[in-house]
Length: 72
Image 1 (cartoon, rainbow, N blue to C red):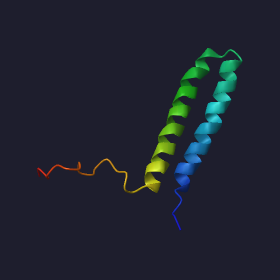
Image 2 (image 1 turned 180 degrees about the vertical axis):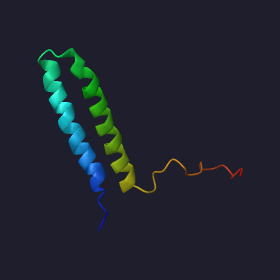
Image 3 (image 1 turned 120 degrees about the vertical axis):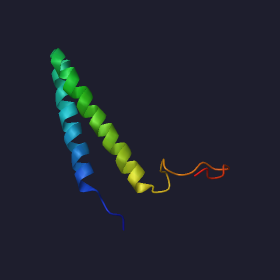
């Protein structure tokens, strides 16, 4: 069974709620709401990508390139 990172899931849920709320305010004509909308949407996307990478341990960025000998 996989371990669920509930703090990241809560961060995604909170960021989505804030983003939807700010989007409603943007659609009602509040120009200032674009900034928190963009921040909340960015945080949600970042955390979703983190959760996806955490599910696939073989998809790391620290792996050596294939076909090249180790230089270190």
